[in-house]
Length: 555
Image (cartoon, rainbow, N blue to C red; front, side, top):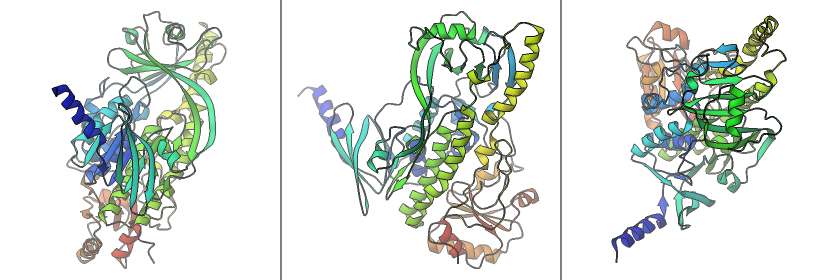
């Protein structure tokens, strides 16, 4: 038999084999990769399938926010993502509002999305302007390095059945059409807006469909970065009455993105007409090579259910919203982290299955809050910001531009200075949180108020040795105690955790500054760095640990 046939038969045999895993993750975008990595770091045998190869020019997300990069820091790959930045990690993340790229500056928002390197007291990692496909490459390489993860591209889910002890999935090889199966204990659907998993569990998307129609084009334009007077930035809002639009640099090789918010009569959005649209919108005559162009619809939709028994939805599979604010991919990564550490706890036996019910109750209110922010940002695009006289080269035009610039800055700051949204969300009604009866900190889109109140993200701090407090948290739960904590009380906590099998790291607050920041004798911090409980010496550490791992409320 020819050697080529042998290789073909061997490949077919591999494609036809059945898979057995603890968790099947469907979809290998950033959300599915994040789920696989979180599970892999906890030693969970995970099969990750993806029907595509995930390679392409499509812009998708371009902002990896500070919270997502903090998760990458936990996984040990934040530096790898920084090194992959195509424009350089120091490239200024400024947003310019101009009449045209060749025209007048109206205003500028500096350090949008907190991408400037350097220490900030509120977070351990700055944001990053980087194409989603590059983020995927870094995540994929890390996932493939973890011994309990298997990734299969070109494989799609066609059906699933649940039973008392697990899930049976039918898979299809996209190239050959061959069918094979996967047996798992849990399944996470991170398969995007057209989720097969969502359909399989009978979940439906509710909300407002087709708020608006948009177009994304990726193009190559050598010299465009030097052909305008405004300086480097990550996004230029072109506010004119002819072709209002957004554009900005995207990748190496003079690669840019462009999205018109209104198209004049007589022109189409075909690749043939797109160079002329870019030329007229910018006022800069250069050769524009179109690399890709696609249409997308902005909606505000959320699934009526995120879970049916052993199957869960994450990311775009359960929430869709306009991308303005850069929340979508980042919110999906947080979904993946939330459900994955809980699934791992159940599989490893230290969490009660009821812990999984906290996923929807925690994430859905956050989704609604963030989606409302995105919809508010979407209400003010380039075409809504135009007013007569903005392009007039007169003294009156200059006055109009000055007034418009201030108005635009006030209106659009909500989209680009959003630390209160990124870090300030909290889990108010979670069965896995022990409330302490205190009032929540104020919630503001920009102003983040750190709080150790249960449900909030544990406040960040830099230590004297240059490390982040977060670097010292355990992979499981962390009991952070002040320096006056009683050793016998801490021993009881350790003993109760050991008896329950709950992974617990004891950590002493290293300074008075951190004691003042946390303002309690003991803080119990979850694997996802949210506060689960705080207080003085409890009557029963076991009762608290059972509560935060799904075993029922503290009596």
